[in-house]
Image 1 (spheres, rainbow, N blue to C red):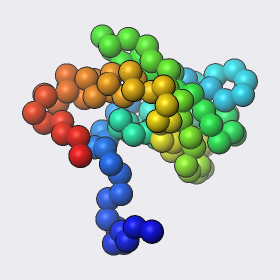
Image 2 (image 1 turned 90 degrees about the vertical axis):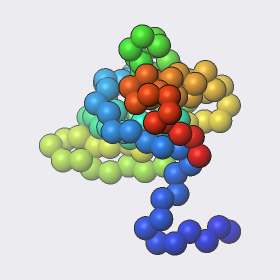
Image 3 (image 1 turned 180 degrees about the vertical axis):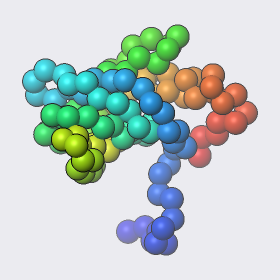
Length: 119
């Protein structure tokens, strides 16, 4: 077991607050959602009627980098008020490297290559 001090950052990848439209797919149809923060390792989205499963797919358009679909595992759910909820999820390790590369390139295009560092 790893000892992490209370309040210490446990994320492996830098994250960025964003406001990007997306779709979250569970077992059925996809539902619209808004990405609140994003990293190479995962995301936080807000929306209504989000899928209830522990595994979801994120459909995201990363501007000039195009549309990407990434598999993810839900790690937390919370009520956000006004009939909305939030889902925090981490990307699956398998079959997401192209998507992770696109997220890295998306950050670098906005922050500059030297400003975005991977731990």
